[in-house]
Image (cartoon, rainbow, N blue to C red; front, side, top):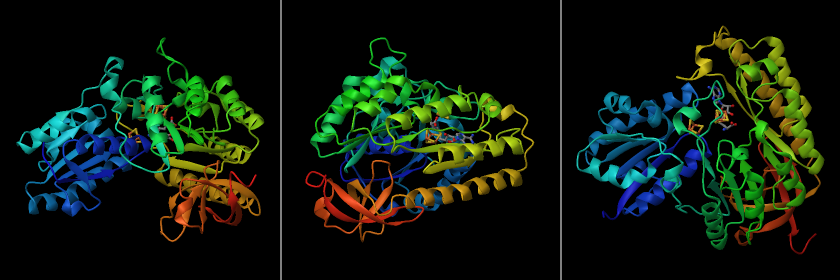
Length: 446
Ligand code: SAH
Ligand code: SF4
Ligand code: F3S
């Protein structure tokens, strides 16, 4: 075992990767590596990469180029690449970049101690084997590294949906559900350590357990997690609209711990485009889910992902996406310009839209969303909400918490309220956050 070495991890992409970076840090901590925020001090640098759009992949190569100089000035420095670009590119990366020491895929985190030891001994290698359900222990390393009031817990790996534009199933493998006993044990460990809010994480949480006859389904998992002492708030991400069951909707009526926010990616507002995307639902079916959720939770807020400029998208079809935005009134939206990805079905569809048209649609959609977000945030002014205080704000001069609907709330309060739920009177609203005054503790002020 080596001791006292410093590890720098740079994370790109989604919450899956953020979570994996915590696991990487935990696995390497057992090998004597301590995490640092300063790349110049590091003995080992790991890039945890994202491949979801071409731009994300280009950023990784750009960033790797900048490490060339660092490696020259510090030859004993080890440089490794993991995550979705590593899984996609494998051997090609090692060939293309002579200053790279190792490449490990999305299912190879547990092999890191050996990979790093081999790299230190001068052996460069690529490890990108996929694991199956029988190797669940390796696929879901339970390393509760990290701290805070809120934490993510991985419940599934991979995806079987093969949306025609998406590279995730290709780089994350087939869907495998983690054992519910392991999930519950990890959540218990977290709440005993002071965690108050847990977010269950998977590419499509609603299909949890469905392929395993010995496993409970997602609504039952949600009920069991909510019953763990100390869980004040429970969230999950991401929900696929085609797999939301009436039983999950019933959970929102039953369980006060479930937060009043659902991220429900629509992707596009026309049935023809949804069909080409292989999403498995129509706009009407999607809206029926939204309405059913609102019926059981009138204060529910929704967020979504949208893709503009999918191959062949007409002006009318884009207008249909805008119309759904108005109908649902999303509190926030993650919107992207379509980007063809290698090996996906949509990459071979005729794409006759110019970049300028796609950009114009994206700009229009994002401008309208900013207005909607601000309008919705202003509806909160002058009202009181419970806010779970998570820590200090980014600027560090205030405290930051979240409403049940997942809005950021900035408050002036002593650090002793971190980790508690306070009642906040909302006095300010911008596109990005709310501000307010603490008017009471939740348990005393109802
Ligand atoms: N599993 C999640 C998210 C996966 S990736 C889900 O199903 O919602 C996150 C988002 O990136 C997707 O929801 C989609 O909106 C976007 N995305 C994925 N592939 C893309 C591509 N090729 N071009 C543009 N956006 C893409
Ligand atoms: Fe990609 Fe679709 Fe799977 Fe989400 S559900 S990860 S968009 S294939
Ligand atoms: Fe996530 Fe990007 Fe991989 S969105 S699953 S890190 S391709």
